[in-house]
Length: 534
Image 1: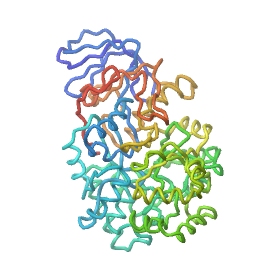
Image 2: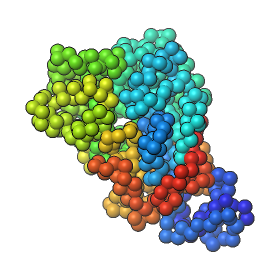
Image 3: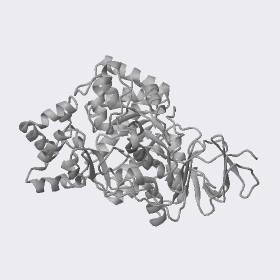
Image 4: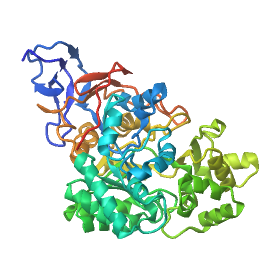
């Protein structure tokens, strides 16, 4: 062969499969965006030859759970830096539209009203799109370094048809939601997602979600869910997800599986055997996990669901009312049926401000610390901040324990997702820049929880199979030329809670569609990425 664009020689190929021979020495050729595997030392001509002896060559990592739907649409240096953090850790495909929130679809008459909501969710004026085709076109106009696939968010569907209201959908509204979902899946969206702790998703009953999941099932695409409760009622919430999967016929994928809050610590000893038993009984069920004991979400999600009915404007009006604040305080102290209640399961001392654009002095401090410094009740501090920021506040929630994280990472059906929320400014969770090197460095090399081929499979081939990414996630003849070259002996996350966008160590180069987007650990500025139709 003499027409290769690039030849990588001397590396240890970790091919993304789980079978025998998943790790072996071979040379990898790239031509016209596709791969060719060659015996070590074979004579093959190429325009460029790179000696990667001592390094691992793996399929590009697939981040199965992101909230990066609009980061490249923000534009400017800020958007590029945020987007680049994912690429620098070896991610060549991001799957967005998770937790019930996507940038499409909506009825045309609802688009304008939804723009304010997307600003809160995605940290910028990134727009809202009538369908998947329009979403893909917006990204094509602003080239990106890596690829993006998107789920259809149930919360977006609901808001795009009904608005942010707390009531069951009518038969006509549900029919419209199903039609919008069908159109998006036909156009190439990757599946249906729910975020059943978030408004307006939390307002929906099991039957509504089952009807929508049945549409995904007809397309052979998964139902992907942020469970209705990941804390004290996590087992009950898992059973609801199982009921939806059985009732709809859809494959089930549990997002960022965790058992969080002091009342749920250790419950993975029950949830994971339950998932294993379901799989043994023939159910198609998987999950993903990030390698941290802290999560991140919106500060408004710490309040009871009724507080957010009507959207951000209605929320801020309620928060300005002392009587409404007292009702929220009582709801947190006593609980609300069907509500996860993060603060009630942990405390304001575990909730730190990640991003408050107009009040950066609060970032990095817990709500409890801010309250003590001001001599205020923590709920009042949270309420004042949400009002001042017009709802645009994200937080870090230190709610898990390491034993549970390790158990989920080790489960044979779990894959890796950052749950990254790349918003401008502040101190976002370091998982957006550190997830994949952290797994490889801490949990593979240092702790031996996983071997290298198994970890790579979770990040590549397993993820590609779950989300229908044909020709990706493996190193094989004819596969797409998305690759990452890293040093197994030094790869490690650099990002911290204090400095969350620090790049990793040990990631040497990243290829997307056969083009080098990272060389010697630095971005090249090349942007061959695209929105993938699945």
